[in-house]
Amino acid sequence: MDLPDVDIVNRPTARELLRRAMSDVPHVVSISDPEDGPPPEVENHPRRTLMLVFHDISTPRLNRVMPTRNDVVKIVNFAEAMGPREYVLCHCNAGISRSSAAALIIFASKLEPSPRSAQQAVTEVMRVKSIIHPNKLMVAFADDVLGYDGALVGAHAATFEGGGGFWVPPE
Image 1 (cartoon, rainbow, N blue to C red):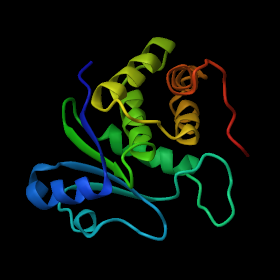
Image 2 (spheres, rainbow, N blue to C red):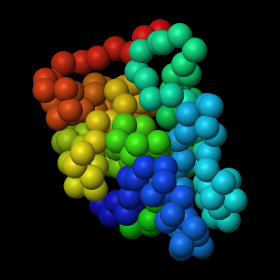
Image 3 (cartoon, one colour):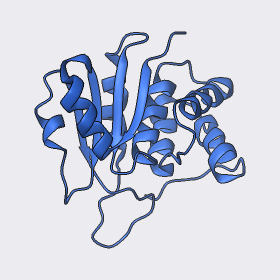
């Protein structure tokens, strides 16, 4: 299956890419901290944009906003409208956790749920950028939303956590 062409970048790189080639970027997934909000270049982007606002956490912390199942559903719905090989720019503050989780979710949503597809989605996101650590909670929600039955969480754990255990998100 032809997958979207994904870029995983940090906030400053996203701003620069959008300044230089705004009309050439058909899809943007922007994930910002609540205190920052999306960059102006994203807010003014003329093409398809998904703006999400939450902190990069996987367990509750005082005065921090966690990603929700609904945030992941929004990423899945956003990905459904993308055609094969279409370009999408995924960014978060550092370009390591939330944006890589969004990219992983986009890949996983384009594949038929199975252990093999889960590993393929992880392999694809690692091909895009090797220094990443997708947000564990976002991946757990995606596993459930997409019907991977633990395979996506397992592939994430095997690759990024050093084991294959199943992780249950907090209620």
